[in-house]
View 1 (cartoon, rainbow, N blue to C red):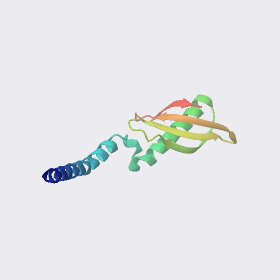
View 2 (view 1 turned 90 degrees about the horizontal axis):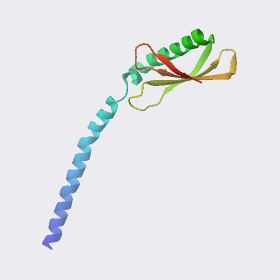
View 3 (view 1 turned 60 degrees about the vertical axis):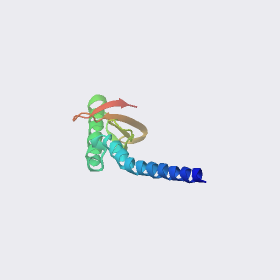
View 4 (view 1 turned 90 degrees about the vertical axis):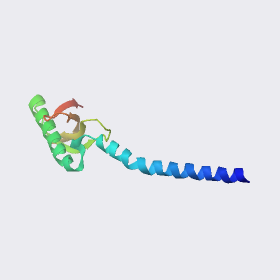
Length: 116
């Protein structure tokens, strides 16, 4: 009987310790994950990042390919430590000519890396 009592007490200790550990580590884990996101994708900076990525893409296509485009969609992957913005759009006056671009936002001067 005493062995069962000791076993139950041991189980309670493990449960309390395990629960306490999870509760203590959860905020720390969230903090560490949140710190990994590039600052240009934060809620405060996203509007500016989006506008700069659109501007870089439009200027690049105008200067390099003499094409005017309309950008319809701007997003980022959500992966941490990735400084890429993805843009979708079309040639002005022809919605059937779609364009896709990837813009590198790691430097102050955003660079178009890929056009499709």
